[in-house]
Image (cartoon, rainbow, N blue to C red; front, side, top):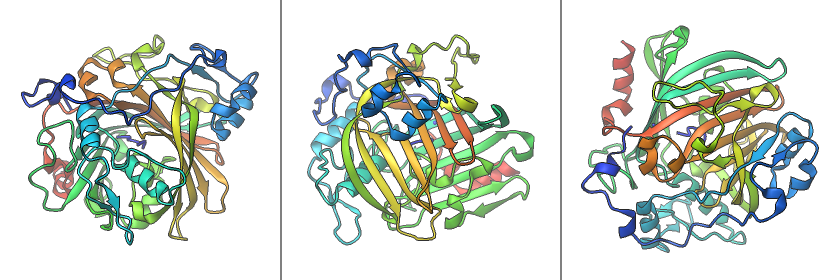
Length: 432
């Protein structure tokens, strides 16, 4: 759910593979914007932004966050400046194929895309700028094979400050094409369905929905409808998910399937507009630089980030100033439950760190926040991730005063992910 979920995870064979390329062997591409300077006294690490001083930070904060902070429901702390890495193969691919990718004037599909960032240079005056930014977000760098064995969902009542329900899950993501981090590169040999990626989730608790599973196939061709299946523990069968169900609340949470990974839908189903660029404070930090002393640790010594603020709905991480793009997505289908999405996207990683979601009547409905860690300051096994790791996600229903928070401990694939895991037959097998 962030690029939700999911953001969206097993060991870095890249680090030890004989085919791995060293960063020194690759050219450094100057198409990824650096972090803005932070010599302003207002932006010093350790500074707390709260209801008493938020007025001084409105130029760098999302307007919805300003109102939440002003109401005393959340405060943020600034952290040290970090230049987030991008995998060297992704950088090389971006440089090698710069200028080769175009948009089909009739369909908006990519033409000539190989790998890397499709459109490293965006112009807010370009009428196709929004569509290009959407494709950049879709093909932003993430490892090709990841899993999340430690995946906790909490449903929270903001007003009563109460956790109503806790779910644990296992998740995995596999990229079939346009691969950068795992062999084989650039694509898997066996791909008869012509998929770009697949996502698999399995609920491990509570008992009443244990072994409920979700499988999503994202086609290489955007004109092809996405395919999704669920294994329902109560019915003991695999069921195909209809398009309309992808905008329903997933397992009673505040998150829709369409919200996964920032936007889990077809690019063509939205009208995209690049609203502008600028600088904004985003929840981007180094996990190991946070004070997690009050958090429980797992058997490997890893501690989840905390959630604080009203109802425990907000990630308790540090924020830093980043160059950003503002991107708007308006559904083409008038029956869609949303009127628009407003993304604040980190310009270096194309991660949608903040998302405002508006209901069909045009009123602000939800705020999505993705807490993004630098891979160098995460678990040792993720050193070779070389990118952004989603540590947590919060989807806050501002109308219902309710939220769903996610804690993730994601990692590169320890062993190659089996393609059989990402098939409806596997859901049936696991459901027996």
